[in-house]
Length: 142
Image 1 (cartoon, rainbow, N blue to C red):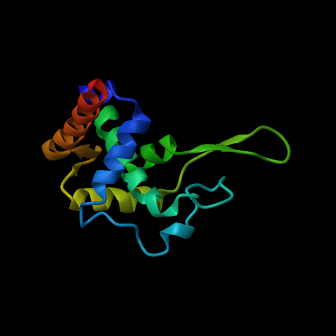
Image 2 (image 1 turned 90 degrees about the vertical axis):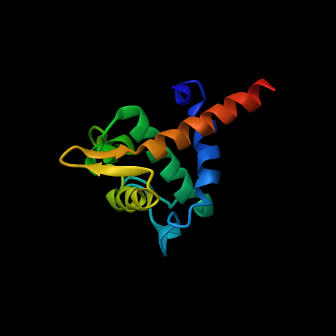
């Protein structure tokens, strides 16, 4: 319940720092050159930290919105593609980045795959998020 009391940006940055300690979560080779969606012009600027921030963001989304699949998460990370003429078009985010990050989070035993529903948080993953949010709230009050 405490993840709702903490600002998402603060929670994600702290979780990203903690995810660096997990040996199974590491950026794939060449990922610093990957664009995150078709409509983006460049790869993320903070390429060393990007992978951990995306994994932390995925953890938060899975805990908040329940079991989600790759396609639904692609919609969450999508955006607007600007066209030369006519209306702008909504475009999904990169599926490979999401899929590989989810597989690494499964290896770290923070999420699991539910049959025909998508990925969901494990009790270990929920307690990891809750403990982190509680630490942020406790340090904020001091």
